[in-house]
Length: 88
Image 1: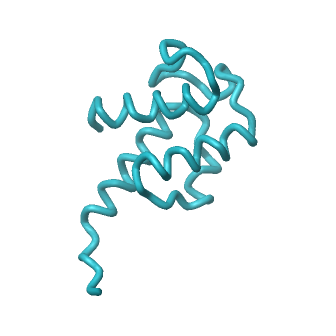
Image 2 (image 1 turned 90 degrees about the vertical axis):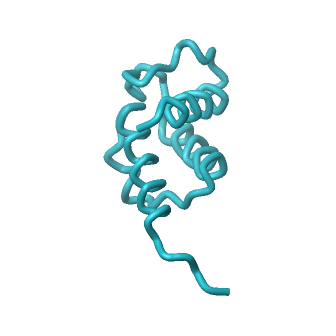
Image 3 (image 1 turned 30 degrees about the horizontal axis):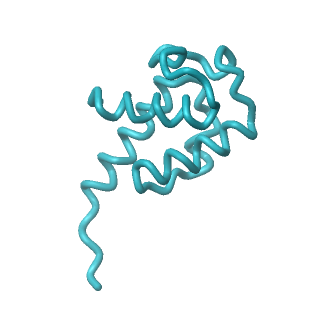
């Protein structure tokens, strides 16, 4: 997992929650950051836009902290990169 990916996720979370970026770290729990289910949906959409991904709902349900979110995004990017190109 790259530092760039982590920083982008941290920035999206901080921007979506309107909190200082320095308060969000890779080791932050969503409960610590007061992220409720509505916040999580907003963050999810922002992450999909940031990384040009579609994040499956079932992949999100078990995510409880920033590290898990970064790991999930990293896996989706890796999976997307390994898909064969779609013929047009």
